[in-house]
Each structure stands twice: as C-alpha cells, then as structure tokens.
Image 1 (cartoon, rainbow, N blue to C red):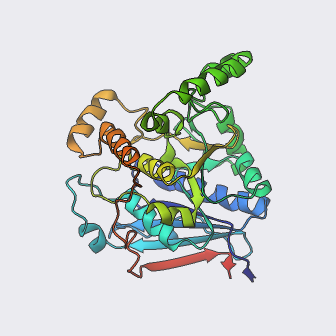
Image 2 (tube, one colour):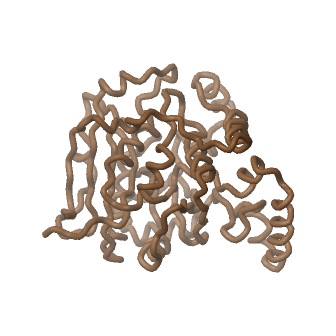
Length: 348
C-alpha cells in the first residue's frame, strides 16, 4: 500500500566495522526505536542510512539490521557510497567514513519537507515524537534537542519501552542549552538546581546579550552542544545553507558551522523542551568519557578544524554582511546515482 509522503526524513550514516564497539546493537536499537515511535504516533517517517565505504569483507547493513515491514510507518532507505568515492576525497586523517559528507548525501536525496540529521547510536524520547505529532514544523527555523548520555552497559534484549525507562533513570550527563534561557545557561546549570532563580537569570542574560556585538551574540545563544546528534530544519533550508562543509579532515566543529550558517542566513533557533531529548549510548570513541591522554594523541594524529577559526570565520561574515557558503554546487554528490535499497513503508 502506498502511503502519503513522509513528514520528516531522518539522516544518519554508518558502516559495518564495529566502530565505537557494539555498533550493530546500538544501531539496531536506533532503528527499532524509530519503527516503534513512527507506528505509535502514526507518523510517516523516512530513515536514510548512508552506508559509506562499506568494508568488502562484511555484509551490508541491510543484511544485519532490523528492517521495517510494509505496514509500518517507517521507510528505511540504505544509500551505498562505494569505496571509489571515499578514495576520491583528499584526506590526511586516515578516516574510513566522512560523516558530514555522508549526511550531505542523505540530505540531497531526502523526500520529506523536513530533514533531521542525527547519529545511529541514539534512542529518541516519546516526548520528542509527541512534539512532532502535535506541532507543525516551520521553515526558516532550525530545531535543537538536548542529548542525554547513558551508560555503555545496556541490556539490548529489553523492549524499546523498557530501554526508555532505563535510560531516563540512568542519565550520566546532558548536553545542550536550556530552552528558556539559551543566552548563558546550560541544561544542567543553576536553573535546574534553583528554579526560583530562573526569572532573574533570564532577565540578566537577555540584558547582557543586548550589549554584545553581533559576532559574539551568535555564539552566546547558539546551541552547539552535541548538535551533530540533532539538527532539524526544512530541506529547503538545508539547501539554502549548502549542507555541511565538505572536507577530508576529522569533522570536528563542522556540525557547528551548519548552525552558524543557518543563523547568518537569518534562520531562527528553537530549542525543544528538555524532555524532548535523545538518549545517547556512550561508547569507546566518545569524546567526553575517553581518557584525556588518549584524546591528546588522537588530536595530534587527526587534522581538524580549530574552534577559534570557526569563531573568526563567523565574525568575518557578520562584519562584512555576507552569508556562509563553502561547498561546490554539487555538494552531497548530487550528480551521482548511488546504489539504494528500500524497506518498509512505500511513500507516494
């Protein structure tokens, strides 16, 4: 049966190489969660997994991940980007997967009017899908949601509902801005500890922001914490900002550049309420929980964009009243027809 077009395209990328440990378990829970949420709320959702540079000695992800049924409200598309494309990108970082370029491939090919770029080791909250179900998403807006980190020790035999209960009760830390007070306050700061102080802090932060020059203003309220895990805007807006900056370096801060681009294009930021969150399963490659000494050597070995460069770049564009456009017109390999496999809902 053909369903109406999807409301949201969710874009993630991966490859079957067990990066971060327990990749298939984490990614399987990601897919199961989206199948359950889309069915529970009867939301037509398209999930695009861009399988970048798949290992020649491993099965494709479509052979090892759970797949939706035709009666489900989730359509799952695998877009295969072959090794020859990966090898064509100049890089000194020795990376098997160019995450942001892969997401650009998905953005370009998304069928829904709104596109959520995220990662494949997340489980979204029920409240987030309730928000999608009750609210009409808007153009010229980019949506952010906080990320809640949970322990690596997960029982993958639990149902999605039981996983959500476990995750809510076992949050290690939260990443993101407070949705009422993004000017100065992180989600786990004073507002949560002393609610009566919220009004005063809000007023002070907005007065402070009023006297900041434009370049600093961009960074005060912009919610860049873990923005690679949740950035949602219309496909038209993604096309307007030119997707993620494409380069062969380690993709640090590239997700932040997308938010800066959106702000420079005049798009409004909306931070969702804290209960509308994603739950992130910690893993070995995760920055926050890794050994700092190991991170030191990884930084030396991997070329990456420096945060100061990002700030100077944004200040330059604000000063000269320009917009940020760094990619060529065919970003996301728009002119290439990649191998694709589709499962689940058949959208018209």
